[in-house]
Image 1: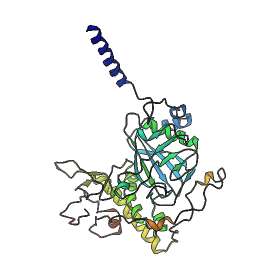
Image 2: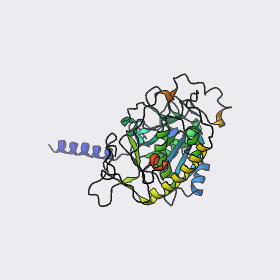
Image 3: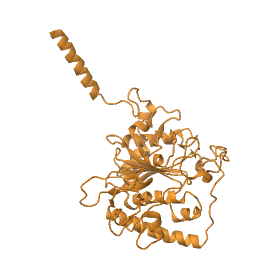
Image 4: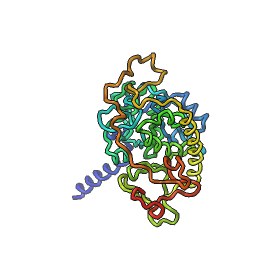
Length: 368
């Protein structure tokens, strides 16, 4: 009896010790990490981190721009703000400008994505890969589907953002180090840099309303250098929402139901509004000047940064799919209308001179 009790105690102790054993693999708990996934950052990048006063394990935000074929890694510095650490030319992306809609359309995603440790693949067939987590709550609410949409190596793409193996080695390591003791990092994927000039060029695109919605989050980030908090309700993105003052209950967002009453931090809202109004004026001037509008459908399957054109000739070809813009479903309109009725308010929301509030009294529409 005593021997059995001792044996049982040893078994329980072994189980307890096993539970304390650290996970040895990022994204997989049972396999040893390959050397390529544990490689230290190169000395030049470590030196750059030091110069920019960015702790090695501080948070990151990745920003992707299709048209420019660039991936930016922003990292939090010692002041708590995000700064650009490094910009990587994208070796290959597929599809056309615009969001991914369904499996097999070759579209690389656009939107705001959350990458957790489970989405980091150290054993990828494309050297190393980072799953964007598509479809996110917004995509699902709008009946969009697809799977295995990645940032990876090997410079081949079918709905992904493909880098060289050397690039993804650095990007993967930066992502890995930022996840130490942290649940996730954010990826912002855009069709292009959301400047008034680019929006004016693409003013005829059926994706324009979607891109203007993304611009809200873009403006929050660019004007504050803080990662925007992202929620989804009424089938649209909501940024930096917080409960109304003295609200007795926390905010609960349902991606397919109307938005709860919320406010936005007045300082964030003020900075974003100033930028939007300036952008709106420039956009209106460009449209009035009748700047040339880009074709709705490019006719090409994706793109590549010009830095790789000589190294990888022939990888960007004429698209073999139907014109993407011909089957884009409409999004619900943004219901917030500013008192001045400006284009800024119709595109981006209410006036931010005070806290932004969405409630039934002010907005009787069921969209609110």
